[in-house]
Image 1 (tube, rainbow, N blue to C red):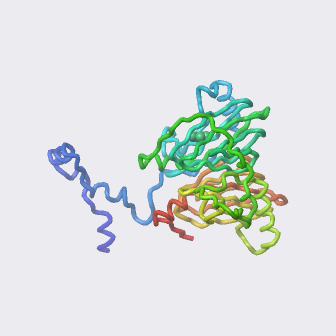
Image 2 (cartoon, helix red, strand yellow; image 1 turned 180 degrees about the vertical axis):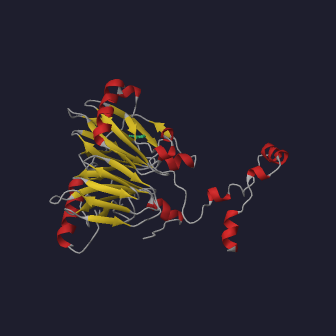
Image 3 (spheres, rainbow, N blue to C red; image 1 turned 45 degrees about the vertical axis):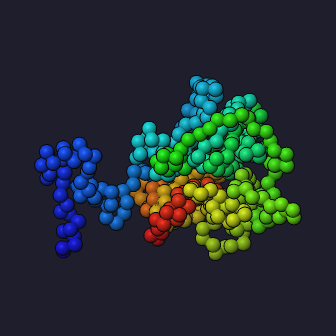
Length: 351
Ligand code: GTQ
């Protein structure tokens, strides 16, 4: 009884005399107790992140229109940001730490070289013939490929094909901006470094082991081909009939740790007709449908993800995924904030 009373009876701002409040304000001081419950709510954090669905069918025509309205020279990166209304659209965040953008590059265009402190990845959604040059490595962009542009690495995007190319950008920009560490530098177009471009890391369990010199790159693998990830999931499905959740993590093949430091990236396969309940964990999540279709249920909300659709879910919520096809697998790309939560010591799995 007494402990419960303790939670309900904190003084309000209005309880304080106005002259006292004014004097605090003049001296850059704030009383904690009227706001204590707001910043430390009981049991579960307050989350601005709302479960939100961005169907590709509505996004794509608007992105193509951006290609007509704004030349690449006026955009540098021609991106429509998938903004979470819970944070306010102008904040351009999908969750507390995640930014999502859908980027369009038209044939012959070049998005010029720059580097920045936030980490980025690209998940290729449609189109052939584009490439991203990252730290001298020319990464071909094919549907479903994951390409890293980690913190500080030079990158530019080009397109030698003949139809629009679209990819999903996932950045930890909101977090890096929040800690006042976000900035970029412009640079000259990079040259492709000889011997780069075909990653010896692209096959699971096989690590290049040069006899004379060892790679000391912090990010040895920059392109994760979808063909390999897809094959790995199908092989798991075939050999592990009792494994409920068929999921792989995109990792740094030298260390086995997450591919980037702040956000985590995964691919998940739902067997035909499968339903899968993901436990309520502290990090927010993003789901992007690579192949097939799935229903995503987050508390009272249910979205139907068709191919190339994207949605997000706040942390501390269980999420149920259901493959809408009874005879084809469904493949999802997932991004989450779990590397960040684990490093900060706030990661929780509430089951
Ligand atoms: O392609 O480098 O969506 O710098 C936002 C910032 C993409 C990029 C974004 C960026 C990029």
